[in-house]
Length: 531
Image 1 (cartoon, rainbow, N blue to C red):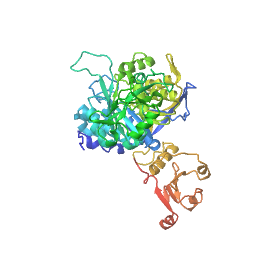
Image 2 (image 1 turned 60 degrees about the horizontal axis):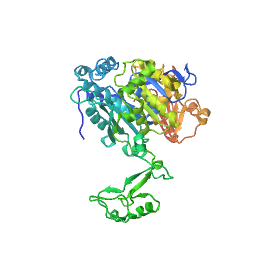
Image 3 (image 1 turned 120 degrees about the vertical axis):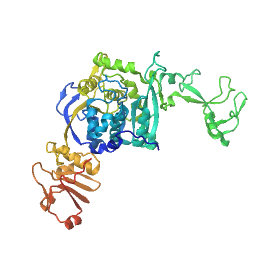
């Protein structure tokens, strides 16, 4: 398989593993019914995170690895435009600082393409980890990086998991500038596992034009229908029979084609009046398909602006919230993201956007939930300072209602990136809340999110994390105190398990005793996994 090389690649290929793990600090919760910020978490599952999206993605792993059904991202396009708030040639001070720290002096000589690839690679690696086995990622991009992105994504997600490169018509009016008018962008689609995604990907609702094809000129009581030609490409001997029309004409398949079904299936449709021979009842046979039987259409890789919106529509949507605003040169319309959600989500899916911008993804999620009664959750990450004043503010207004548009309802919690889990001396950071340390340790052992409050947890000692795969996990930890695994501690354990994995500062139990009792001791902080 072709591979892509650029200056600095060797420094970023495994950088996602060196990114420090930071905890998420809750700032406030917002619920449409209240319309006010609250200190307590809403429990809605919707999150808006302000901070570097690389560190924020790492912070999501304990709760969300392998659980995100749909990822949509609209990263910077490296057009060379210095005026955009994200700084579109990847010379943003935050990115430049990161490149200097990770790539070193070589980063000073990188082209904007090298910088973009260095920025994107570790982020895509973490997005891949977060994606569910039957999930998919949709990446908006233009010609500046599309070719590079395709090869890089093949390397990270696997070429076998490439779904399609869709074309989005971003403009609907002609411009007489340049050699050929720039009227489209791309959306690259990759599955975590192509075969599994293929089984769950949804058809899309028919457009007005598609519905208009179905007519009912004969006043059929079953409703609107259309005639579908009954031929297929190729030659299959059992699909080459003669068909006699009601008025006597004999039909055989045209050269190079065969009938689309075997004769026994055709006779069943004929008996149930599902074959149409034209108004003269003598034409080549067609299968009658009723509109009521259509559960949707397989989407094409061409997404025209009349179906999914265009850039002008997206700008008008932003203006409806904030008035004239030039912070986003290439916003995406809600209808475009809605198409993504329609294909890749079910009613309970988790949707992630790690380049959240103006918050279009959350807007689309809330709209779709209102339409179909779904309970999809969104997670937005935005590194720029407008994360609260624009991104979160738009979500509030969508929830409450804006202009003459009714509110969708909904809630979210707003977070910032907090302390690192480990300090400079590689010790546990005691400024981090105990509950977050417990969540982290349990995740490193089981790759499962920690759920507190189960009946057996309440009956056991306070150091029990949970029981998973017949193993009881204990984190015997006290801030500013040394803990020791001994017989006194074992006497406090109430949960029965086949094996016990216990973290503590010290251990006084013999190896022979622990082997006999199926006890595994891990030393704090030495044996806590860093990821």
